[in-house]
Image 1 (cartoon, rainbow, N blue to C red):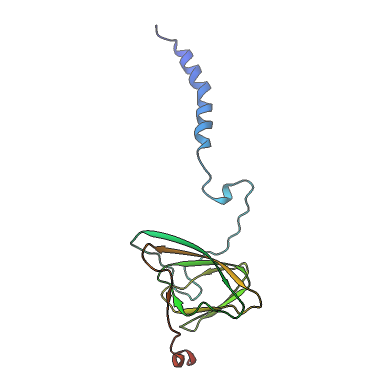
Image 2 (image 1 turned 30 degrees about the vertical axis):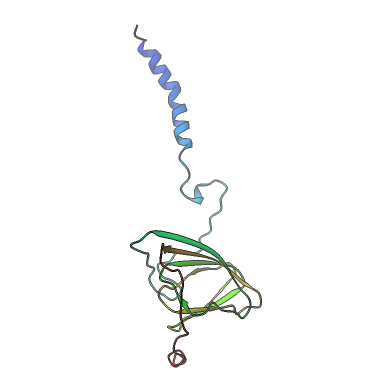
Length: 161
């Protein structure tokens, strides 16, 4: 026996709000600003790093993200090195002064983001009186080193700047 059409439409009217509620619950907010109790503060929006180089992303290979906490005692340095992959950092404590082989010198302090240079020799030195701590994020590739250590640039070249 066939059910009357009005009973089916009534069931649909009762179920529709329930279906919308259930499916709506599975849509997670896409951004922090979508959370009612979140506060969003923009830290950096840039297309270049601190030395003015355009940002580049790896175009091939298997992506691999590495997150580190780095602590530099006062007066210590990272040693001259370069990054073949994009690197971003957040100063948690202290200060660090970075000098590049091209002569750029930039000091970063607690609370500042660092958009690192790529394929450019640089050395970071803790120029403050307390330990400098950074959260560092390498957006690299599997099998590619995040850091390549190097000798200091030629002293004659560096002194001529």
